[in-house]
Length: 76
Image 1 (cartoon, rainbow, N blue to C red):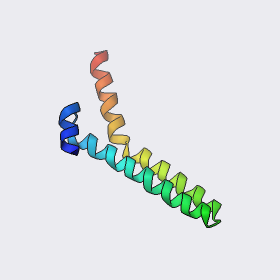
Image 2: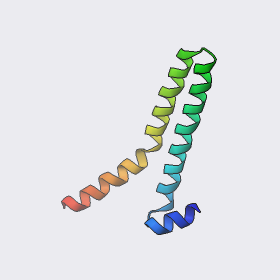
Image 3: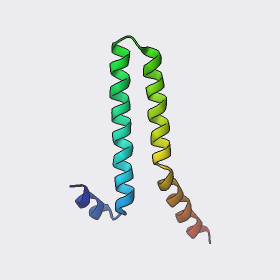
Image 4: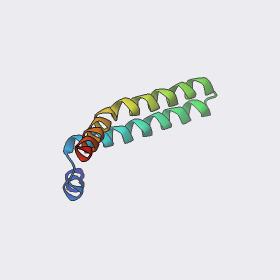
């Protein structure tokens, strides 16, 4: 299914895989944070949320570089 979506929107598989990783990280971090909040560990929940956000940011760096490269080709 993922390959069909990638073929339909014509993106490289690396970017689609990175996007799926980012979605997975966000989902797991939100789930773990919710469990910690329910258990009364609000501080740990906040730390998990921050770690999840940082992980998504670092996972998306290759996509950011690709966008910058595309912008440079339009400027030249």
